Length: 635
Image 1 (cartoon, rainbow, N blue to C red):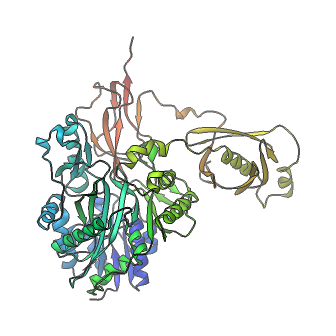
Image 2 (cartoon, helix red, strand yellow):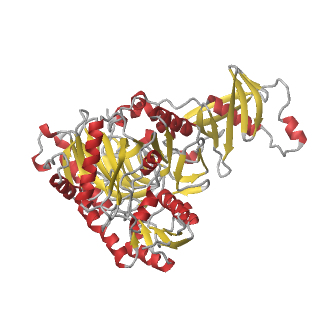
């Protein structure tokens, strides 16, 4: 069969990435989009686009019938599912084939066999792949702790809980079950031993319809937040060759056990003493596939398409070269419980010889309905040391304006001694998050640059204004106040110099200062939609908000008010919660879902709940009043 037109049943970064390969192969491209994605990059990037009416994934990207109808209407003859959404849905894969379309993925039977983690483990046990033995939560004892609760039907960190205390097991089991049912439509949850300081190591496989199965090296994906990957690399560092070979053999055995075809990933947990255990098989392309592409010099999407057309793979893959590292850039605040961010992304520019896969361009809106990942940034170099260094330098020099991101966390993670030494493990952020997110870079010089840029006349301003802005007179200094990352900075400056600093030049978009004999360039961008200024330099990036002379009285709220920290949907309210009920400080009162993650809203103090405005299923805007707690008084 020959494919001529490809529909991608997905959105954002992965759709853009698949379209890039499709165009290179001469294929016509078709996008689908929800209403919030009407103007998204993947829609603009495609030859044709079909609307899926609605906003929620359940009404749009999870509607297989609408996607197949869109493919037929647009003249596509194949569907690529990307990752997430319907990519591991066997019923959808069958429906695609029944409609006369080519499915770019493994056979439905292989997807079905690996769809449930519990069933997959039974299959792997029969194939001789090593496993962690499950634990019956009802019979668990203190000797079984810590336990990891996992949703049987899903991934991406949804429906996962670590239990370290038997007293909390029942509550965590109920929470994991509810989240799994909400995310995947299946509330089945199982328990297994939680391995402290284990490593998440996976093997990329690629198989054709002629019996050839490639094991394309290993990847380490141990640096995770909320069981979702943040930094990935290939090959996994520090593995003995014997362990690497056994992982390859187990991955190939897993693929052959289900007559696999196409691209897939077999994931393992490797203990501190080097014992590997099968976790699951992802029957799709992975987010982190670019690191494998870089090391092996392959285009995995192109190979997926060729395998789907019936092309046979060479008997052996190419040899790997060098090392690759990928960082996921998220619109989120790691210091605030990984709180996702929404709004306009004014600028996204990453310098250097790195690969940037993104679904956004300058001026695009980051909404509440989908994952907050902005981009994947990938560096490839002859050695791991060089690849890590190149990636950290590129991220440090990136200009990202409009949203709080995890960029600083990524840079600090890549430069952390443990990571540099090639010793990542899944407990990395549990141990180091506070240090990695604390002590924001000092913004004093950035504030000075912002003040000078604001004071500098535009190049096309009248001559009198340009001369007046730079009078060489010793008068009283000007002052300007800004806030950056919660800290207020006041700078006093003369148009020509500043104590300890020489002003070499100043314009509305760039300022050059000499600090202790070192020349520093500051790029300044003013957001015309609000008063924020973005200052980027080798000393760090800062978002500065001018402090008004008088406080805004509308900023005041009643004590004890619980405001929505982000726009989202209320998915659960604590059982029995109602006005008049006593609560204790830190008690979870309700759960808010935003951008594919659940966030607990905690009681700010011990006292009595006097108002409850949140109900299950209600969509709320940022800053919406959810509840009010009247703090108890002590005599």
